[in-house]
Image (cartoon, rainbow, N blue to C red; front, side, top):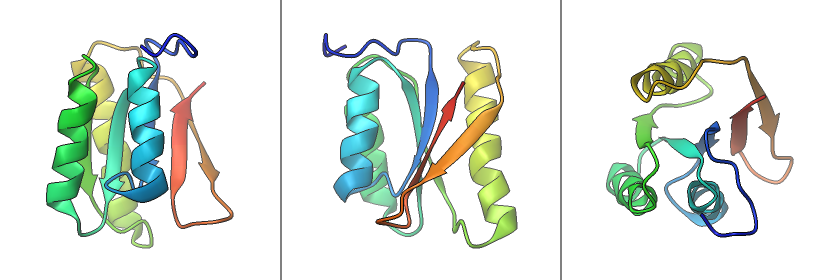
Length: 111
């Protein structure tokens, strides 16, 4: 945890988390104690590397491929979130999404 923000016990999904702003967001959340899933379209190796970086902070992290423009693949991303939350024994709570007006990335956090 970075000392500035304590979000231990929370879970988030960051789309586009393999690089750029999405990766920076995912790493910041992980450093704050959040279990983070990242969605990616085609950069699997970069996504897996980001997962390893997040796991170094001792949080649950995972990556799921998919295109959010495809409803079936979008559901799979959020289903992986539910599955990972259950595996880490976190209680499942309703998700809300906050799309970024500046990119195709969106962050999903539990409330």
